Image (cartoon, rainbow, N blue to C red; front, side):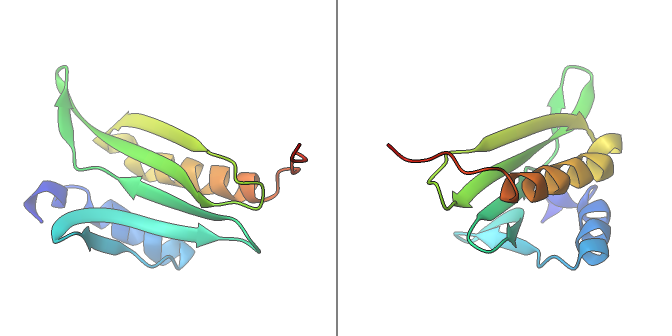
Length: 108
């Protein structure tokens, strides 16, 4: 829990704003992630605990495709200073929403 102490208020406010269910543990370990689903597609946005990168603490935000209609393997990642976490979470969610509306590539 201590690892996320500095960023939990930002994550909680973002989840409340978008009515997202925050998962705060996986396998008995502290984690932070949400799922966002469309008709078929499901994406996970995960937030890693802050770490030192150079002279600054930064946070890794990941967007993963969990289930897609076309079985696409999608991953986007952002490594940002803690002060940019809120805006990066907005970008991650907007990216997931955009990906849910993407044209499907026909399978061969």
